[in-house]
Structure formats: structure tokens, C-alpha cells
Amino acid sequence: MTVYGTVAVIIYLLCSPFIACFMSGVDRVVTARMQGRRGPSVLQPWYDLAKLFAKESTSVNNIQKILVMAHCFFAIFSGAVFFAGGDILLVFFSLTMAEVFLILAAYSVNAAYSGMGAQRELLQMMAYEPMILLTAVGFYLSVGSFRVEDIMSASLPAVVKMPGFFIGFCFMLVIKLRKSPFDLSTSHHAHQEVIKGLTGDLSGPAYGFSELAELYEEVLMLGIVGLFFITSDPRSFLAAAVAIVIVMFCMSLIDNIFPRVKWETLLKAAWVVTFFAGGANLVILSFIS
Amino acid sequence: MKISKSPWLLHYDGSSCNGCDIEVLAATTPRFDVERFGIINTGNPRHADIFLCTGGVNSQNQDVVRQIYDQMPDPKVVLACGICACDGGIFKDCYNILGGTDTVIPVDVYVPGCAVRPEALIDGVVKALKILDEKAEKMKKGEYRSLTSDEYAEKLYGDPQEAVPEASASGDKEEKNAG
Image (cartoon, rainbow over all chains, first blue to last red; front, top):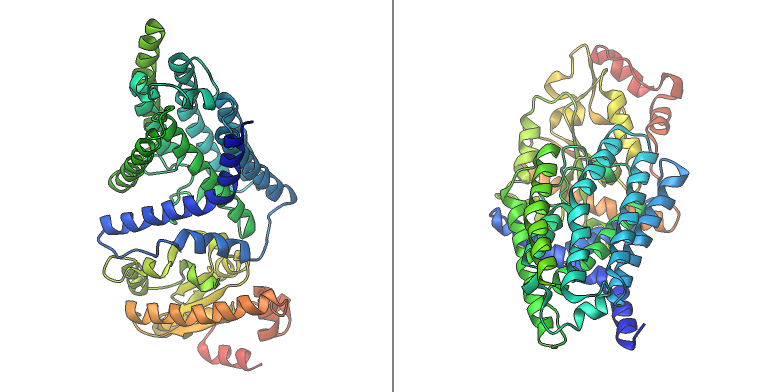
């Protein structure tokens, strides 16, 4: 690991919750303004997180908490691998592992809404995983390496060669960040049709850990959005930051204007996008290279 | 950091006529926008800090009210919203009504009104937040744990086996409460 990688990982580990809390705080204010409300303070997600850790620790069974903490660990680990400049395949695989632990935590309580949330989460994974994995393949075809540090030192931004993958990845981001219309299993909004589904039976610190994992995951996902724009030129970091802000705004907008869809629509939509945006780009890329 | 900066509330409709419930929902609309205080109307007792109960408790939903209360992690506060939740209100003498929310779980703040006004409701929640902070402070020192619904019933009615009062005419109920 390079010196740069070590510094990036340390910054990631220490600052991610603050950065992600600030971003979701801004998201909540923007959402409120879109709905004609004043909205909470920008620091609200931070207050929420601190509150959860101050609450009484109750657990439905013994294993639930361990599974949630494993979920949190793997979410942080995948981000650390990414920011260290490691293999992007490992990032995606350990992110899937993190998701699996959360699903196990939801199934372990044997409650109706948690179980339904876990089933829906599996469906969501089925919807977004193909595109996410294709994105890794796309990076390999356009840059010639799965390693993040190699992708970052390319002379041309990856998005030039893989616009289809970028569109596809942003589409999957809507599912991954649990935004409407694809917030079937659980939502970052308080009210959800399956009583918070997946995270319904987590309370206090355990729920805090799952929220913390989500914050780290959010930073990672936006990091990947940035990776599409970063080259060996330092100015490209600015382009990446602008792209992240635009993508975040689009997420808020989409979240506010679409109602939740049924799982069939989710699967169809995600696979159609994967096939046409990801698949077409993949075919073109493999011809070029 | 104070816990009252992030109060998530759970709204349960007992035997309300829905007047109060409409006002509760009105409080979350752009006109009153309770989210500006960080208040979120969560649908899940495990995530809630404030239990907001409208309508009286009847013989069918008393177990639901107790279960919701017991599932909420400490520190927590209970708000009885509207006159029916305070003492049974207009339905007080009905054969199936036990009375207000405090017949089954301990209530911290009573917000009267028929229907309760959103302003009164927000005022009640703000009062509840002070209590929530006090409870959190005591809990940190290890001096406080809220009563479970069983313990509350035992305190109120003596024997936990006969904890749940039977719905009856209001005269009988007063006797039981006094005992």
C-alpha cells in the first residue's frame, strides 16, 4: 500500500461518518425545500446517529447484534480496500458480504416485517448485482486493470469509454442508497410500507451500527462515482466532486418525484438498464480493445 | 448531545374518532412541519422515543398498547393526545372502553383537546422532550429504568395477574383505580 493509500484510508475511516452525515443532512434539507417545508438542521443525521448509540441496548436474540456488527465491519472494510487503491472486485465482493450479514440479521429475528424486508433485499441484490459486477469488468476493459490505483492513474477519464456503465451504475445507486422508487426493503425515510422492513427489529445501538455502515457505504458508492472521472491530472478530482454533487442532487430529485414500485418492476427496470446500458457498452468496449 | 435533538415518534390510534389522528398528520405537513425539530413519525416502536397515543384504550387494543410500549427502548416518553387519550373523553362510559392511555401504561404528558390542535400537540411534544432529556440523564447515571407495562399495572392495581382492568361502567372503574 502506498503512502497516499494509507492516508486515504485513515481519512476514510475517520471522516466518512461526518461527510456522509453532512451529505444526508443536505439531502434532507433539499428534500424539505422540494416539498415546501423548512426541514431539519443539516446536522440532523448526526444527532440521530448519536441518539441511537445513547439508547438502551435491547436485542431480540443473541446473534442479531453480532451479525449487524459484521455487516458494519464488512461495509467499512470494502471502503477501506477501495480508498487504499485495492482491487475493485474485492470491494464489490466484500460489499455483497456485508449485505448478506444484514439480511441474516433480519432473518434471525423471525419476525414478519423483518423477514419480508430481507426477502425484498435479496430481490434488490438480484437487481443491482449484475450491473455492479459489469462495472468492474468495464473498468478492466477500459483501463486494463481491476486495481483502483491503476484506474486513477489513467490518462483519460473512465467515463469517456464507459458512459453506458456510468448511467447503469447511477441507476443501481438509486437502489443501493435505498431511494424511492426502489426502496422496497427499507428506506432512509421514517415511514416505509413494511415498517422499516430489513431494519425493523433493530433498536438502539444495533440500529446505530446499521446506520453507520450505511454512511460508510454511501461514501464508498460516491467514491466509485468519482472514480469514473478521476485521472492522473489532479484537476480531475474537482470534476469528480462536481459529478458527485450532481448525482446526489439527481438522487434527491428522483427520490421525491417517484412513488415506490413493485418488485417485478424493479427487476425488469434494473435488468433492462443492465442489458442496454451496461451490455451495449461492454460489447463496444470489447471491440475497441 | 441531548437526546431531544432527535425525537422519533410513534403514533398509535386507540379508539379515536380519527379527529386527533388527522391533526397529528397535519403536524407533519408543510404548514406545521415538525421535522424542523428533528421529529420523525416512525412506524416502528423499536425506533421510537415518543409514544403518541390518541383515543381511549378499549378491551381489544389494550394488549397492543402495552406491547408497543414494552418494545420501545429506554429512554422513552408517552404522550396522551386528545381528551379521549387523557381520560376516555366522550367514549368514557362505553361498555368496551377502559379509559385513558394511563389505564395501561404510564403517561408523561397529557395534551387535552377535542380534537387536539396541532399547535397544542407540538407544545406537548416539546414538553415531552424535556422529560426525555431528564430520563436520559438519569439513565446514564444508572438511576432510572422505565416501568414495564406489567410493573405499572402491578403498581396501579396490585396483583399483576389481575392487572388489566375489565371494561365496565365508569363507577366501578373509579373504585378499582382508588384501590
